[in-house]
Length: 246
Image 1 (cartoon, rainbow, N blue to C red):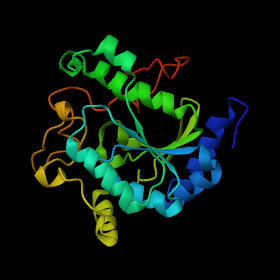
Image 2: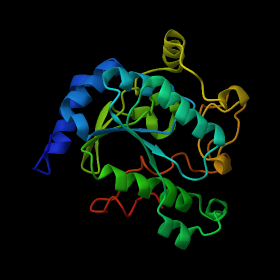
Image 3: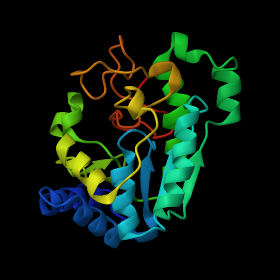
Image 4: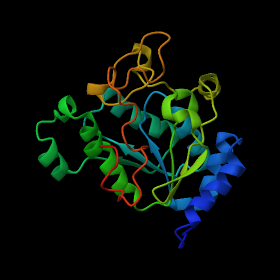
């Protein structure tokens, strides 16, 4: 489904959010797929909480396009989990997005940019690859939830972002609801969860969290940074492949 008028996307996002703001995540995903079909993508880290959203999406359509950001800095356990979970759920279109060789050669030739410029590292390894991949889609799905805190506390179920419709089906769900779904459907956990990682990203910037810590406390610990950049609003008129997180 295409939208020719530039003001159609914000108005569609507002209508869908009004319709779905209290809906079950499965209903949100079903409506998203009915609206966009092959022009809909699900972005997944295959991290600690990813199994629930992927399982829900597979119930709607195992052929949905799943975009996985393979930054080159992921834990080996995450790569194994990505393969095992995709097979278990019958997902047929999981695409591995990797940073462009030219970007790495110019900006991070020694793979140590994370030591001096965390935002810059995320930009070339996550933001740019995803921006390029999303050019072929009109809508996309994230796994963000309000209980993560920070800027996510006011997360809508449907929003407009960079001229696309963005669905957050799990925005309303609590930790308890996620855990209950995992138990009900016997979903496998990310291997690092048992080692104290409630949230899993790239190995240089992810640490175990202490009991009672915020679920994302181990991400960029000791830094002011709370988002990798793919969910950061861009300045008006800024091209998507330029980025607004740096």
